[in-house]
Length: 70
Image (cartoon, rainbow, N blue to C red; front, side):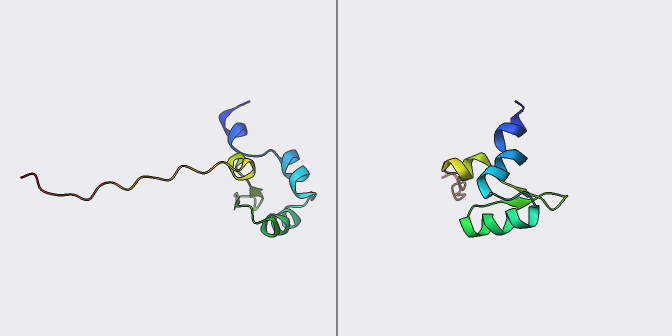
């Protein structure tokens, strides 16, 4: 399994999750389920595994404010 396959749900998994085969219906169901997704170039929904598994996405730490050396 490639890193991309590990990161995103497969088409079959998306069908199982949403109960829908058509992209437009999958999008409607994902919105109802309040699961984050994005659309790829083919206008198909893409869902990360972490969104489904409930893992928190790593948030980028803001750098400390700059202060002059004294």
